[in-house]
Length: 357
Image 1 (cartoon, helix red, strand yellow):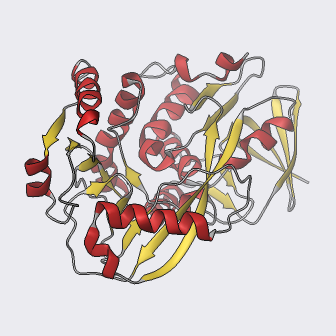
Image 2: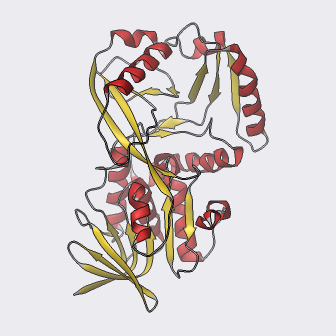
Image 3: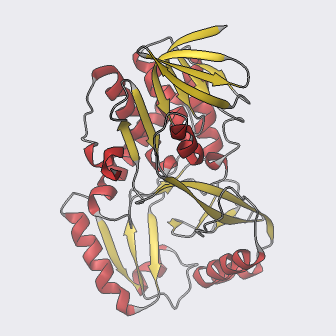
């Protein structure tokens, strides 16, 4: 027994759901999303959920992120309140010697239309009085912010389902075959047939590619995060390394560890994270930590997204990246354009998987 769809998206995280929703705006039937567990149980549900542009290099990659961040206000109006807040972002530095590097970053961004300011100590403390007074300065961008990842994915799914997207969860894909202009997707529950196949399995994208004999070089990087008790609002901005959520909790952490799929938290990184947070914001020393969790980033080998058609395979596409929360509105838009129109409004050639050949 085979069920046919026009398009199957493998992966129900923020990237896969962003694609499914945007596809559903262009055609109203024939889309299936498959997820091995349940959306939000993987990377997309274990993240600080920054919508972050500045500090990303080179400047063309920051520009790509900027285009996506600019889509968030409109996306929120279309799918509903995702608790998107454009707080502005601060990236502090504590050595005066780092100021020149910050100025160079600001200049490279200026050329492509991203405005970031290099702040003095007094300017940083005026914006964010809670920061360590030993701060030397910071880069500041007004476009940065954060979002509630659970609401984002839930709203993507609700909007997609209204547009007749089908979902099959707790349904692991076990094999993929190409046969006479179509793809046969074998899962734990059923076998499906589709014309278009999109591999958006996040950290598992390498394994999905392997089912078709394709090397998609996506690795895993673990990040551990601490969560404080709810505190009265006191942080004005999203700071590189920590942010305060709507409910008052402070999320702290930005570790990167090669640990495969191991989502354990470890005492050494928890201690490093706590020390970092207290160094940035000394008053956090008094806050109680109520939990720690970790997430696994889908990190392409060179650090940049892998997007678009897979050469040599008709109607086969890939969307694999870290920073999925920041990039999902743009990736959803561009992948939809590619499938429906055959071209994208913003060039994505530099993100093609062919760069690894």
